[in-house]
Image (cartoon, rainbow, N blue to C red; front, side):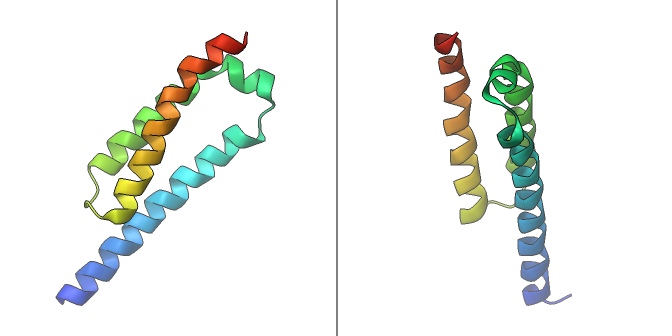
Length: 84
């Protein structure tokens, strides 16, 4: 396998992971606010799962960007308690 083929394979794998993350995130978007607010632990577990997945990925700008987004979401659940 050439270097270019390895790079293409790596990028394809990264995009597959990002697609998986976005697909799961969309399930939370589809929930009503009341259901989502009450599933805070499930959302935190979802975020941690994807942090673990992306930390084992090849580090590249796409992965770094997604991890930054996830970290910004991890701050938000603390604010959900304030809306009850």
